[in-house]
Amino acid sequence: MLIVPERDIADLMTRAAAFDAVEKVFAAMAAQEAYNFPVVREAIGHEDALYGFKGGFDRAGLTLGLKAGGYWPNNLEKRGLINHQSTVFLFDPDTGKPAAMVGGNLLTALRTAAASSVSIKHLARADARVIGMIGAGHQATFQLRAALEQRKFDKVIGWNFHPAMLPNIEKVATEAGVPFEPVALEGMQEADVIISITSAFAPSLMADHVSPGTHIACMGTDTKGKQEVEAALLARATVFTDEVAQSVSIGEAQHAVAQGLIAETDVQQLGAVINGTHPGRTSLNEITLFDGTGVGLQDLAVAAAVVDLAVEKGIAIEVDF
Ligand code: NAD
Image 1: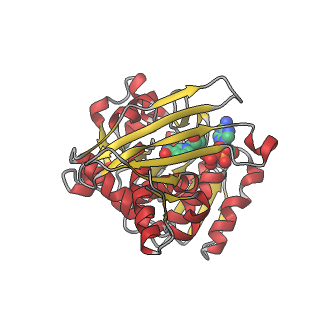
Image 2: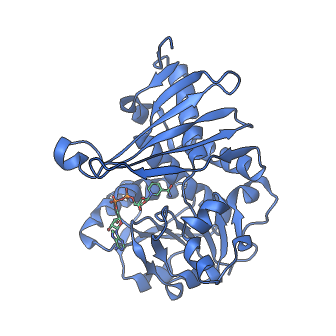
């Protein structure tokens, strides 16, 4: 069995490798060559922690396994550790023997950023120039850094519920040499691409804050009850997702479906666009919306990629098991 510890991930994993892994696995999911197992998520009654498992099997990539982990809200204050903790376990699909144990914390941020980037590549207008960020927390920095590689953006605009956090994303824009401007939510009308990545339970972005032709990646809503954008916006948009079952139950589409504004059948898999079985954006004025809920197969795909890189560089730790 190979071990790739968390401390080695930053030096090994690249945004490009994460992008390729996620794009491939979305395509495999749409081709029904890969599927996610039902998610387990439990409040364990200790340290206020939420713990669970996300797993799946990708027959195309021969990746089998799970990500185990969750959220420990007291970690930072009590122990100086980050609150999100996860580890990926990969198994040999031919034998069931454990194949690898991989630190999953940084990988989670990279695979989530890769998902919105894949959606931008396949759904945003080719001439997109202004990117709008809603959210300025931990994930937002990864999201922006990856998205800036997908189009020739010449301006970043940003809004955050807590304005004091905006310098987090301004720093990323500045490092990429792109000017940053804080805006009111109405100012998002200037954006060609919008990424929302917040932990909100009520919508910030309303349908009339979005101009025709915009691509929106909603990345924060991954739990029942969370919501980042007005449900009416989904009714105006062509809606895509990583996995339809998650989108309509724990993703951004849960609200529009519950209100009868769209049906489950209106939500398409992004993988179908990658595979060429769905046309994706069909006009310059169309609003496209990607509901990125986060699936276990994304974690397995990036973990398998990082194991390959660790083996290539001779730094994977091998143990008899
Ligand atoms: P964070 O705590 O670092 O940042 C939270 C962000 O949400 C900040 O920008 C904050 O200002 C904003 N926010 C908080 N309350 C708000 C409110 N009431 N209205 C509007 N905005 C509000 O968190 P993070 O690590 O950046 O994660 C952000 C979200 O992304 C979380 O909901 C997390 O569960 C989700 N997430 C999704 C995936 C996925 O695959 N889709 C993966 C990882 C994380």
